[in-house]
Length: 90
Image 1 (cartoon, one colour):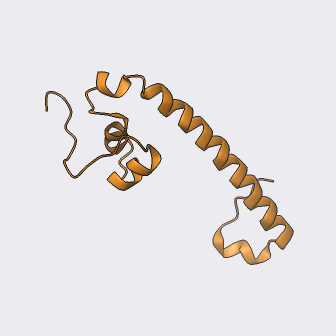
Image 2 (cartoon, rainbow, N blue to C red):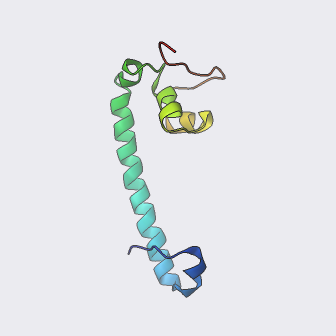
């Protein structure tokens, strides 16, 4: 079930429909996360360095505009320390 009601309309939705919506959304999130991991695996083959980043986490930091801790969490093993990553030539 796809659920697009605004928060102000939630009181009108049955408990069963809410559970169905949460379950469907969780399934979608897990599928998207699996696709993200697959893409990150491909980036780790050297694409980040080719594009001028020190590692994949640095690429994520800049391109996704996420925090350093979020980049480290999403891509463990590519720990970003306190130094700000720089692109080559900048």
